[in-house]
Amino acid sequence: MASMVVVQHKQPSSTILSSSLSDFNGARLTASVQYKRKVWQLKGALRVTASSSKKILIMGGTRFIGLFLSRLLVKEGHQVTLFTRGKAPIAQQLPGEPDSEFSDFASKILHLKGDRKDFDFVKSSLSAEGFDVVYDINGREADEVEPILDALPNLEQYIYCSSAGVYLKSDYLPHFETDAVDPKSRHKGKLETESLLASRDVNWTSIRPVYIYGPLNYNPVEEWFFHRLKAGRPIPIPNSGMQVTQLGHVKDLATAFIKVLGNEKASKEVFNISGEKYVTFDGLAKACAKAGGFPEPEIIHYNPKEFDFGKKKPFPFRDQHFFASVEKAKSVLGLKPEFDLVEGLTDSYNLDFGRGTFRKEADFSTDDIILGKSLVLQS
Image (tube, rainbow, N blue to C red; front, side):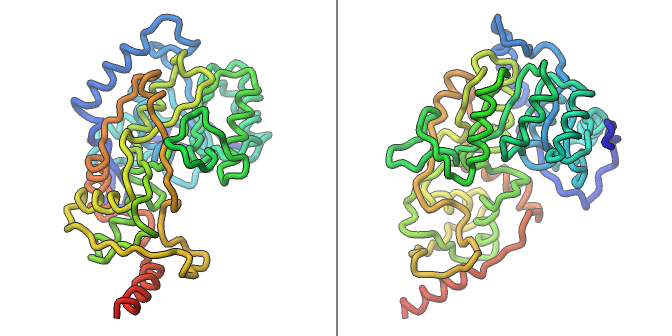
């Protein structure tokens, strides 16, 4: 049976995979928090108030977005519990994070160990604890959310991490929150979860990120480019390379999650979250090179239809234009992304890949297939 435990601070070691709060520390954090508090002091905020400490449950929280979100919530004075299966450390020191700050965080973060698919356990454990707010950052299916709602009838706010991948492919871009959605998309579980939340008597907010990047990214977004740049290899990009996409920094996403907490304007609303500007695939390759201090890369364009890559994915992005408007988040929440693309990629490189840490080993097998055919055609 799961139990609530306080994770004690352990001295950091060189074996801990880590990232950094970097710009979440110091002056930039101070300015952001001061602005946020000004917004949150609006009268009539919906049940949750920024000035009061809340008992917050994060479903997940030991990877990527959860690492940054949990720290911001603890810094705000909330009691934060992570619900996980216990396979990863609850507290990881991030590079650049002072020992004292990590020790303080590790002494305050709580853990509820269990499997969210064990619905009976979810109901019994959550009802026994009683939480004010739930941040669900790893939910994929609606049936995983219903037991949480059943267990917490007095829940003040359910904040859900959805995806911009729910939108129906369109020739008219950017995607807005009111655009048609695709019930057959690979993110249909998230779409069904949004529908469930809307059907229940609960105060909810759904966040739809586009592509997320930043330190400790477990998806091969910027890491895919960094591996090739470090190896001095050409970068194979499908078709013209002029496909337009959009990336948002994980720390800006964490800030967005904080801004919807207790914000009456966020009640029963959906927000796209990402960077303000769009970028082509070729432009992204060049931005990664600039961020890592590499020479401008050689880019090889190819037609994916001419190759059989089996089950391997030769490129980390969907081969189409894909970007969304963040104007609603900017106007309603007062959100202003802190990172432009090159600055954010530099932050990611310096605090992660540039330190020799990454999630996946380099695999150039599909590159070699593409480059091999390219050399034959050139000869």
